[in-house]
Length: 303
Ligand SMILES: [Fe+2]
Ligand SMILES: [Fe+2]
Image (cartoon, rainbow, N blue to C red; front, top):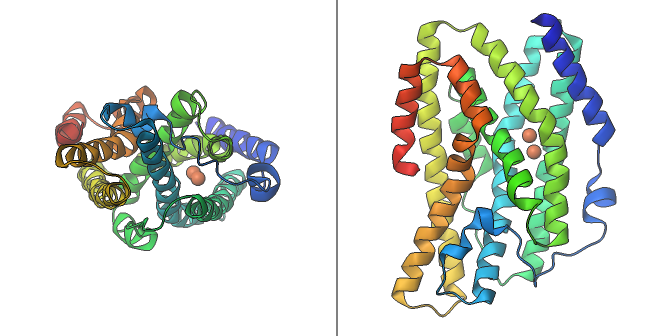
């Protein structure tokens, strides 16, 4: 087990060094976002579920959601980085490869947050005024980091797994803004290591908790998904308000926009990750069937 674990961290370090990229030199390259193109692909934005909108309106919705998608990653990565720095303490005087893998992970998440701030500026430059990011990274971090490490790593594993799924299944496969696609290509390259490290760390922490602590962790994971959903509801409302303010829609169309936006955000941040086989397989290995059933029942209203 130890040899396998050490090999896992070593592989992540090697891959991290090989694919390391720079925000300006490799990703932005002096480009602006192309406002004649979608940002978030339709497999994630679900804008095709709004048939009464014009093509231009559906594109605008994809751009709002794409702007929020980048912003929410920036927000979420605030707590992920803090947790990774905290976990690195466990390796200070132990496995130096694990320590290096976590330090690189943290460094990459800081870079990603900077990249997402840059994308917000580029989005603001080509979109009308009035957009609001209501989710606050520090406030979310305070809530998440108040839970046990087991629960925080479960949530993080879920997030970094769906990041990979979104890129492979939707972003790489669909016609969207070249710059927007490049941002998430480069993000995916580094997140591929993060997802492996999350699993290594989650298994390591899981091996050290009691059955009672794990059971409490399951309840906390459910609470965390509920907290994520509150953030999604608030941002979906802000983004729907912004969209409606810039489009001429009747009451039924406005309600459809609100419904589809919330459905899309739940699809992106909760459902698509839960439906991804690898996360559920890992979760099933770590929890009992009764605990898995508790999670499934709690998530059912969001699915
Ligand atoms: Fe990231
Ligand atoms: Fe990450």
